[in-house]
Amino acid sequence: MSTIALPPLTASRWRRPLPGFGLSIGLGLAWLSLVVLLPLAALTIRAAGLGAEGWLRAVQDPRVQAALKLSFGAAFAASVLALFAGALIAWVLVRYRFPGRRLLDALVDLPFALPTAVAGIALTAIYSSNGWVGRWLEPAGFKIAYAPAGIVIALVFIGLPFAVRTVQPVLEALGREQEEAAASLGASRLTTLRRVILPELLPALLTGFSLAFARGLGEYGSVIFIAGNLPYKTEIAPLLITIRLEEYDYNGAIAIAALLLAASFICLLAINAIPSLFAHERRERRHGP
Image (cartoon, rainbow, N blue to C red; front, side, top):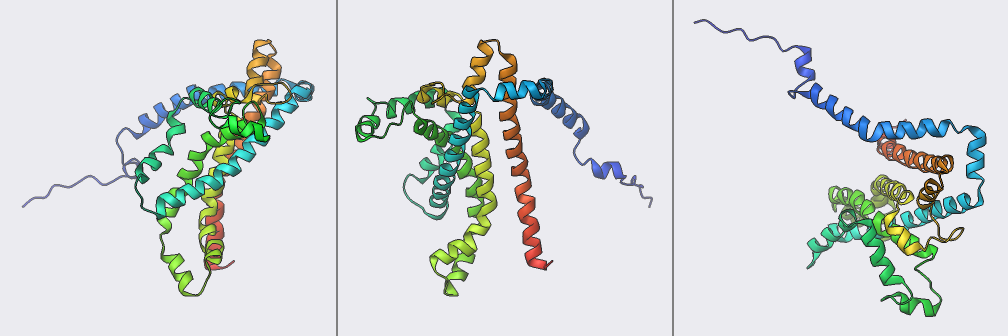
């Protein structure tokens, strides 16, 4: 009885288990280059062509400095608030079962689907002087709309889903076994939170903070309605880029856009470095130095 000899599996076939992998990745990288890489490269080249003098002239403008301080400060404050609120919402969604839980889980993603302009108009209608909430807050001395506080609230609204969705899967994978073991050893709830839960959640918390911060720096639609756009007071950096373009001050617009791009790129690098950094620390604690 004769047997049919099968061709040996070559190294190339092992490296390419999916048919058309080379063509697929080539087309993907081509589209990525056209849509993302080329515009960013053009902005980087134009920004590098300004020179040190052009950069200083654009950045030392008091109006630009005020807008950058407001954008970075509001994005940082909103990211911290979104981090705490998002971690709490993720904890409730994972650890408790209650009527309306699926609806709450779906509402978390609403800022992703809702047009940012619609969100800005809705927040302004709520927190303005004659809005549902603003009519009670302003007489008490709390001005939200057309103030930095309104910008922070808008950025919390668009940054909250990032915090929830980065923490939620980690909590689902964590389970209750480690908490029950800590409780059986006599650890208090605060000790269990500090020594058991937070070390596991810290990478996800930092990732959610970085995503919310990067998103808040470039947010435009939901902020311009509630900010009021007063120069030196409530004018954000993305809006100032548009104003500089309308004034045909292309160098000034490029300088501001390049600063925001650099900050967002640093956040993305941190997001990619956080998991490997904590994985390395866990290996060291497990196996020793």
